Amino acid sequence: MTFTLAPFTVTPQEAGFTLAKVLRSRLGHATWSDVRKLIKARRVQVGDAICSDEARRLKDNELVTLLAHPKPLPRVAHPQRLVIRYLDEHVVVVEKPAGVNTVRHPAELEWSEKRRQLDPTLEDLTQWAIAHRLQRPARELPRLRIVHRLDKETSGLVVFARSPLAERELGRQFRKHTVVRRYLAVVPGRITNQTIRSFLVRDRGDGRRGSTRLPNVGKEAITHVAGEEYLPGYTLVSCRLETGRTHQIRIHLAEAGHPVCGDRVYRKALSGAVVADLSEAPRLALHATELGFEHPVTGEHLHWTMPLPGDLRKWLEKWGSKTACCSETASGPAETASRPGIRQSRHQ
Image 1 (cartoon, rainbow, N blue to C red):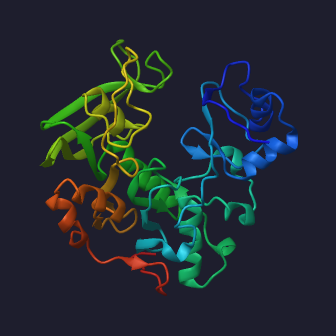
Image 2: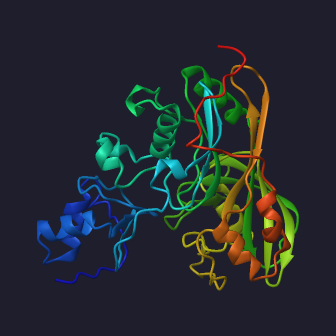
């Protein structure tokens, strides 16, 4: 039997029930077996991520989509393909590819390693890559500790802490906004250099994250925007984060009238008007190109840059971008996961 279902938002009455139960109710004549097959086949998406856990309990206002075709596993599902830029006993910095969640949903934390391999996160891939590089079982390694994350479709540099001390000290740097974070994004139109300040809330009034004009509400978000290259009808912009709120860059650029190319979420104004995306971007055109912080133990300033990945570079080249053509040489040397050894910090 062929099943079709328009994307839907979880209602308050459906919140708290499992994905399988809600999906079966929405489909009408589907059996439990039918629903399990759809979920196992990677045809069900919750938010912007495939959900392969039939027991995942849904939350109010989550978006559920039944895809017409199964979504293939990300090409980077093998840890040897992950690029490690820095590794010692306290921190690891990696290049995140697009299409992979940074961390696992809380409902999936008890998954076995075999099940994780069917739908790996960056956290999984990084731990497996470290284990491969050090030639040690992953279960013997200290767990990775999350200090920041990137959206699923965003590529770029990510740091994980590997010790409680690193988690605490990196967390302090992120809270004090001393971590250097710069992103590249492609937006329609010509955007001028500016600093965007607003207070972000989870629901701006239509179920989406956004800025509020209400006093003493929300969290302050500050993004410094600069034009890097002006193309026919588009701008390659550099965004430096002073704060790190959820979806901050995407929200700020969209509210400024320049939604990120390839963004399927923040293209709708509060009035309901939708900004069309004619860019044919291969995915969300957002890339974390620069990362810098003080080592949590030695105090050494560490800094990396990562050029635009191939999918965005190839897409930009058709617009005549010179930045895209030259970005391959913009980054320093990388350390692949297959190289043996571990860099030691100066202090134990």
